[in-house]
Image (cartoon, rainbow, N blue to C red; front, side, top):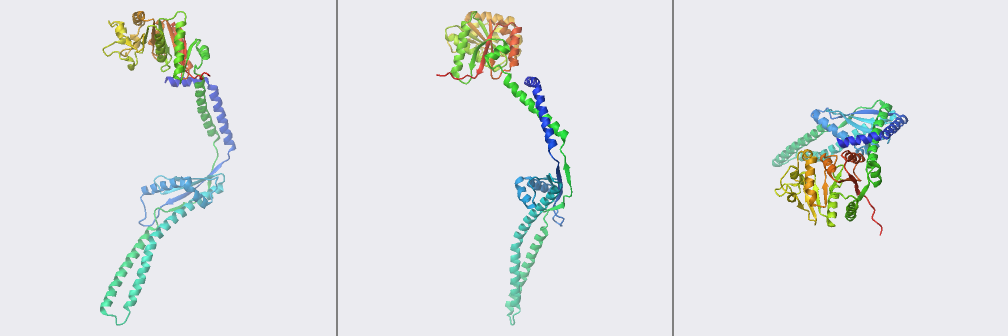
Length: 478
């Protein structure tokens, strides 16, 4: 919801651009509607099936077959030979429309000439009728031709046997044999005639298509000027909003020290490079050295950001590591009591962490510190996550904890949750000697960075400056 409101605010700021794009799109649609002529549509009605007895299909079967024919005819590839056979011009479109649960479908021809669309609709339907008829005729001939040959052979053989029976003085045994063969041949003939009759009866296939009603008139399709203009305006609004979001995304980022000064009124302490680990390490080392050389060096330094994932924890840990590497005693405090992954080994019976100390645990601070693996640097983990971190991290409780931690180090670096998502961060920043605001130059919205700056002003936090992360830098020339 927050992101949606932010995008709506961006669109509101670019509202004049959105309106201009919508008006231009509406004007273009209006001009196209006025310049485009009318088109005409004619319809021929096709029927699938046969009234021959025994050939009828159920309505459901007819409907399925009709839809199949419609899909076949709507394919541009399948239309090509039929358009050529029907001499349909290129400027006429053909569409096949099935009628639900019916053996009827329509062939609609749409084009700029009324008479040509009428002729094309009927001609296309006739071409399809002929194509289907030719296909079934070829199938019929393939089935009938072998039977015809067998019937011709049978007729010839019967005639030969009958001629042999007319021979005078034919032995009785031979006559009996020929008469038996003649009966067999006549039986075979009846069987072949029956098969031919059956095939002829099925030749009126229910899959055949006929032109049930030719196209007679064409309907004029005049362009809807008002409708097209409205659609153009709506499309322009959508396009304008998209352009506003893109332009807003390009401009609503604090991406340079100049913008940090202009938008936030704060100095830029460092710009941390993205992509090159060595360059990033040098930038963070320079940041740490710069802080140590400032007048009034802080004992408690809070590192925060407007929103999560801006590089705040990376900056805090590197400041602590770099200061420890030059011999300073440093304690890095993880103040994120919301993240269950932030316990860092605390709460396992060995250390209670920051949350334990805030609840008034009697344990010594030293017992809650963890080795960082870096000389001179210790870590005070967040400890067990809290369901109500704001109430737990009150100003009085946190001040008591820091009073116990500060004597053990030359510098205490507190990694806080993001300001705009965790109210307890304000308590840390208000108590700390100095606060660093980390801003992601590639992703942080200017409005978020300004709001975070305003929060720090309201709580009277001593803001040292801004660290810009994910800054694209050119490699230095050798």
